[in-house]
Length: 221
Image 1 (cartoon, rainbow, N blue to C red):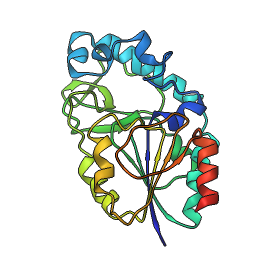
Image 2: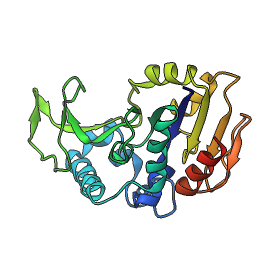
Image 3: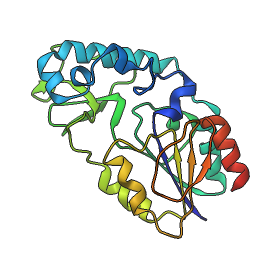
Image 4: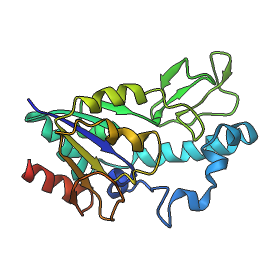
């Protein structure tokens, strides 16, 4: 069974109503990245950060997987599908995908300050003063400036790919953007995005959104 490795970014979940940071009306327009997605922002104003991710969690509870998510899950019938996602939502899992690696953390989990203790919290809020271990509980998110612990596992997955698919990723955020460098030379790369994505790789470009793009990919495969 051929192994398909799918790298997904914010554009994967945009059709499900999850705002993307880089769009003109994206979340970064209302909040500076430095304030809500860095360790320094957390130290400066933990309440703002908690409020921000509590709101994201509430939003996620009412979002549904789009047909792109569902289409990727359906590919598991004929392929060994591994998904490496930059997204912190759980829409891949809710669509039925069984092997999902989250590079940047998960919105429905919380951790202690050192990320040594991680728990599922579902869609509930994290409160100021709520502790895990000996520290304030925080969102289980990899913020800018923090290490990406799952990157080594992701590299190993990409190295074994027969086919690589990139969906809704700008390929601008490292280290995730560098994963294509580990793909075997024999593995074709399909890139699904409604906008042009600059890349030095030779790719089969499907200029469509996630849902239409996954449907097209399925026909091609």
